[in-house]
Image 1 (cartoon, rainbow, N blue to C red):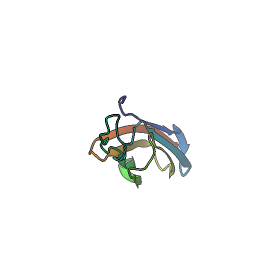
Image 2 (tube, rainbow, N blue to C red):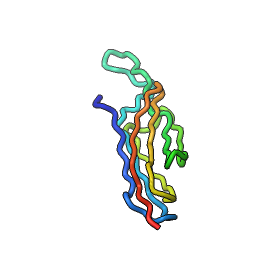
Image 3 (tube, rainbow, N blue to C red):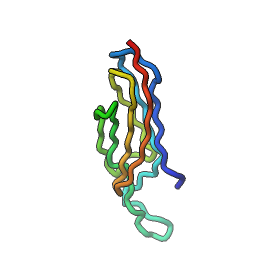
Image 4 (cartoon, rainbow, N blue to C red):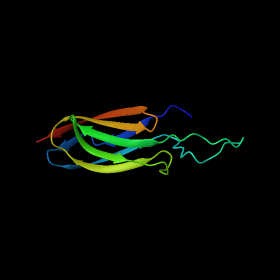
Length: 109
């Protein structure tokens, strides 16, 4: 597997109070623990269990995922542009491994 990497798309500039679309994806194989390899051995479970988004250190979105979610999960949600700052994204694997990404947004009056 290539290095797991998250990608995000958030508009760079927004007006105060504007609803902003956020798109995220992560390239991750999402093994559910029931498949077998060519030798008949069970492939260990490994999947993104939680996704979290914070905007200027305040949590604005969180979701819990389960083993049956697809590989390379894609997520779209919306937030309200309040002030300029950073938006942080975290994908947390069931193994405890954390993948992070961030984006900056400029909010104009």
